[in-house]
Length: 111
Image (tube, rainbow, N blue to C red):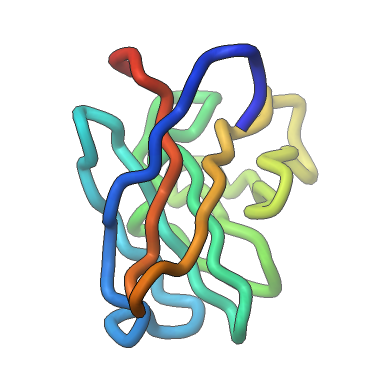
């Protein structure tokens, strides 16, 4: 997560419910969140493409990237950076594991 805003962790999903390369879309405190697991890595980004505001949840997740289902742009899950397109990066949220749950840090304000 970038910027100076404060963030709080929110319980999002049980670790065992996450499947490699199958994105999980959630609404947490009004934020559209996409959680992706690849092996031991669990990442969370905003579930909106920065190009046309398309939901990324129906896109493919491969090798640490999510692909927008609308126009095919690839975004790195770790950094949010767009690969192969001139689009702004995705907002990335910090994650942590607590008592077998994934928790996602979200800004205090509304999206």
